[in-house]
Amino acid sequence: MQDLLLIASKTFQRIAFPHSLLGLVVLLSILPKYGNAQSESDFILPPLDTLVQLAFEHSALLRSQDVWIETQRQEWQLEQKSWADLISFGGTALVGTNNVLDYQQTSLGSDRIAVDRRSAVYNGGVTVRFTLGDVLNHDEKSHIKYLEYEKTQFDRKVIEQEIREEMLVRYDRFLSSRKMIGFASENVESMRMAFETAKKYFEAGNYPVAEYSSMHSKYIAAQQLLEEAVLEAKHQFRLVLALAGLK
Image: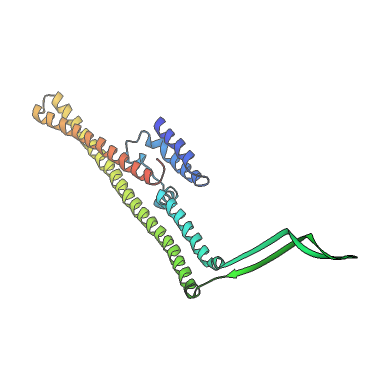
């Protein structure tokens, strides 16, 4: 039971709220009997749909696919805005002082002098550059990116289907193994009653030793088959929990 409570603790820490609440409720509902499970009624699982939903929530493949879907969506949106790459804005500003020669008129005539003149020049503009291919192929390129984005969503559905089918297989195997416990238990009870009857006759001296020994061996064999059935059910039970992200 201590190991199972540890599983519950790790599960609660690993799953993000609010999905963790569902996982924790499911896990705590099956822990009490599973710890000492020996009979068919001790193995209880939630409905198949609940297990499938939990498997979706804890699938690393689906989380990875979600990242890929978002990546493709962003690339599609960037392609739609790719016209912006064809337009650029630019500008320059020139500010400085120029030393020039000028003429100054005096009473004695004209004379050349050096004059410092400050000047500032500003210009700006918009540049548009595109090829014929940019114009003709833009819509097609955008559509291709959209198809790639759409494919990632279909791929996610394929992964979901594979998870659903795997859960169905494991769930069916678990149900079959749990049913075997019932058959094995009935066999043990039948052999127990037969063995106790044989024991009474044997102790009274009215039952052959060989047949008594054979009956005892059959009773022991029936018990061993029950133990094996319980172990197999526990194994199949854990496989279902693992796929659901509860272990």
